[in-house]
Image (cartoon, rainbow over the protein chains, first blue to last red):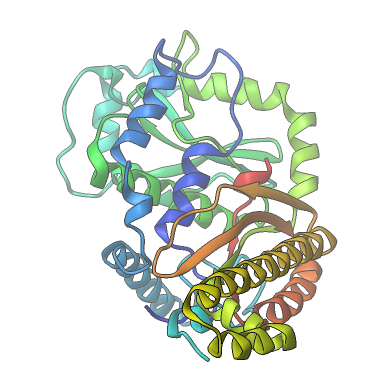
Length: 106
Length: 282
């Protein structure tokens, strides 16, 4: 497991946010099926068990895909960027995240 | 353009995107829905390319100083695709929201599967009318979010490390350890249990102090804090807290400095993820 020297979102960080958050249009202009709660359940069912699989190593394949995408994009844009953009906040300072726990110092 | 009036021509339009790929020929209902990824302000009328779910072309519908970032697709939600497909949908949805956020600075992410139906006037017209109706309320939301980003802040504990640290730091426990060494087995066993309980209580006190401190730090530095469910990470580490915060650029500098400090305590570590579009604060 690589130490996280700068903040990078993984798939698990995204899943809850994309599937469970965001503004809901509470008007009859949107598609609603009688089983809309079931739609959400279907999506969640497809992902069941994934979060307990995430030992920060097992989802390497997806994380690697995301990182490759980011690097390719960064190379094309001539800059460096974390997986999911900088949004104008600039490069964050180094913080000692997780490496202490993972490498079991002391 | 009144796309909804084109009927079967909708399908032909899609294939002239220049992608060169064959487009599924089907009922004219193929692309009558508008999947809305997010709203942006001030926004512009623009084509963002085929970055959407199922590589659909994403473009904006501009209504005054607001725009909706959409793709044209079937008027059905994405629901039964299996794990890999669901993940691909989520990744694509985020890719679009993030692209819009980087481009325009302020976005309101929409819930996944927000699809405007064609109805009688067509999806685009329906969406425009809704934007117009909601203009004032949306403006307020944009003001609250402008320039800010969401971060996830997670506090982790290595139980073994902290326990060792607590044991080393306490003169009483050291003394107790020494005395236990010289005791007969039965008594030693009971005293060892007592020692373990002491360590456990002290460890819990420290954990609680750290959690409280982290939460109050975030409250000071962020414009919004949300408590999330903790996740299992296994391997001797425990996630103690999982928080989402909405942070301005100035707030971020203070936050990062404070988190460095929190993460320095033996046995604790902080994971900071972001910046992300403000999914959890709209």
